[in-house]
Image 1 (tube, rainbow, N blue to C red):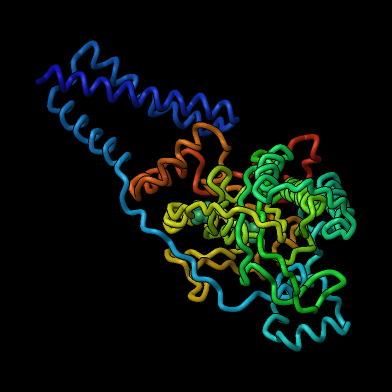
Image 2: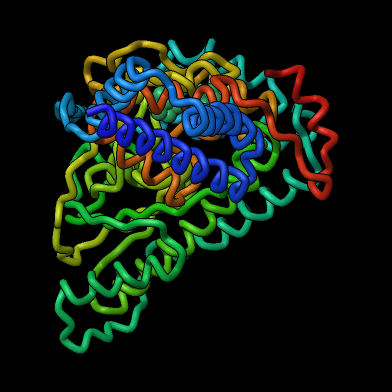
Length: 459
Ligand code: SF4
Ligand code: SF4
């Protein structure tokens, strides 16, 4: 009996040592030196216990207690329970695009549009006056202005503008060769990934996916008409390294780059579909007719988390979304929504803790009755953006789901799905290894790090 206990005790110690070694190796590999250093402490303690046991034999009672506790923990890690499905209510009314912050930002004082909007929405005037007093996105007067990163972002946004005429062209090849819709869709699925998409899904286009009125561009104020029945949604990954400097300029450089990548892929797919004889429209930055996260969620790409963004299984919120709507009958193969992410959000709150403008809810359960999801304070978030000049992204950077898409973190993501115990322990470990408030990563020399000094004042 004592030999069996001794064997189990040693086996468990070896398993923990191997796990910690794996973590240390991966942390060095992904340049998380602090996490690797922290893991060295328990690693050295367990190694010492192992060596001590080899030479002096740890008392049997201690072995029984520690092996018993570890066995309970190992068993708990693999038993599935407490994963009740989270349902999102479908909104009764469509959302008016004129209410989004980018549309409100474009309103010029003393114009008809401006007066009309605040006549219809007087409750927004005072809130919007606050961001109008700030220098604005990409402004030279903003607190985190960086000539390199801001101008790079502006260049990407200008390139996105060049794509605008291509979102719904009229002339196409109509070169169908009697292709079947499922063949075309299968090609699109593979091609999109080859073009750089991280994931792709398909859904029937539902009324709540569409804006009620157009809020940007030349058709501002027009009631939205879009007769497509289907939508193709895909994600593109935002670089983990760039996100770590958020809210500094790398975030807007990276997000604009990914708006461009998503826009290019969407335009290519839409043009391809039109060439095969079906109607299609690309939805790209500043020219959306659909609410991308809602479409992406129904296409099975993820769910909407506490910070109000799409949370994907492999990159968390570290993505941008592209959408193409079409009358090509895409086969709908609905993937189940992973409710464990919402259960994790219920206990995590790391984005709320780190949000510099206090825009994210700390509520344990989802706080907006109508949509059954957390809603962020868009006005205070956007006002912070206009103050610092970037789109901040601190919430994305600190999210435990936003770690690199690699074996270590995908293993953790898998365990998070199993039960609330795993989610609780993973949160504690994430806070220990990466900190509840992860330190800001200074800009690299080639990025002109002068804003790295100024940032301390605004966090
Ligand atoms: S930081 Fe935590 S609470 Fe916020 S979205 Fe990510 S997992 Fe959810
Ligand atoms: S982008 Fe920044 S200010 Fe906005 S919610 Fe996220 S952390 Fe808060």
